[in-house]
Amino acid sequence: MDTTRSTGTRSAASTDRLAISFWIWALWDTARDGFFRDLEARMAELVERGFNCIRLEGGACLTHDEHGCPRGELAFLEAVPGHGAHVRQMERMRAGRCDLRQRLFELCALAQRYQVKLILSSWYFLHTFWFTDPQVTAELLGLPPERCHRRFAEGLDWLLQDLEQRGLADVIAFAEIFNEADGLSFVGGFGEKTDPQPTLQRFRAWHEEALAFLADRHPGTRFALDTYTPHTQADLAPRNAQVWNFHSYFLWGVYGVLEECLWGGADLDDPKAYAPVRRFLRPQVVPFRTIVDSRADRPPMAADWYRRIWLYGNLNPAALPEIEQLLQANLERHAAAYARQAEDGLNQALAFRDRHFPGIPLVMGEGMSYCADNRLRWEERSDLYWELVEQAVRSARDKGLLGCVARTNSGPEDPVWWEYPERLQRVNAIFRGQLP
Image (cartoon, rainbow, N blue to C red; front, side):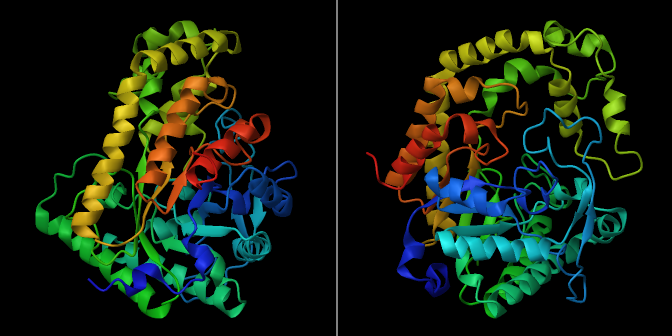
């Protein structure tokens, strides 16, 4: 395998380990009280907390139309109007207008000044369409599957051309056509794929064609495969990826004792469906149908997100201390198993990389857990939780990963940023080799 492009043409600084902060929708979080309204202040805080890399929605296909013309300002909508106040990464994402291209230029210029790298990705088919206006949404969600990879590669190409022309492309650590490319609905969604092997390999061929297009046009930038699991399927994995960014949510199972009513498709407007957690909910439960109907005639979210927003939006504030004790107790009971899952996932990723992508950098770009409720603080306060996070990032460092996110909830919109910056500093210092 030709590995010349897997290392790229960056300066020596690009070989430093990437301590990644997750700023998924930072570009259009621009409300008056938006967490990311002041990008320079957030960038200074990022460096103070030991991060040297940001992973975010880069705006491919949102910054330019299908002909490569800049779109300018676009309208962005609330994802679930009236129901996002307690959802992490969503609480201040209000309706407004934003020019993502200009915001990305601003962010890249700040990244140069602060010596920070960016990872550009696209969550469009998973999450970003939640926010986009009807015209753009219809255009992009209406793409046939055989056009999706190439269309978003073209969008990324136009964006990278803009950055190159402005001398800003050197801040790009690598770019991905899609976040969690193996979990997209048009390739069979999450879980084991049951499509015939030739069908999966057809998707792989489209992905490979799109990556080759980008690599040819931007030889100084690395292009990555991003997967939701280290156990991804070889028939879907493009063989010309220059970086593999996998996700490892080995601690998400902690929330199973609370989220048991989210699975199985039971009707959440029927109290019997949520009886196991009824004691944690407020007396007057907001009907599930109200959450679904809040998007009116817009394309629906995945069902599990409606259910998650319903659950956490209905938690009774008076029950939060008991919930936190329950989650901590669950972690304590299963800590050894979670530690094994973290190590097993990392070993699986290394083995898969060595078998299918020998020599390319490996990154864990999302991970640990996802706490949907911004009022729950048990993770931030739990010493055991942080011990497991430290073990995971130390192992990732010792086994040679290029980049690692301490936790997906690691940006300015998360309570840990403000309340426990020293926790973030420590895990980042461990991964970067500044602490043992």
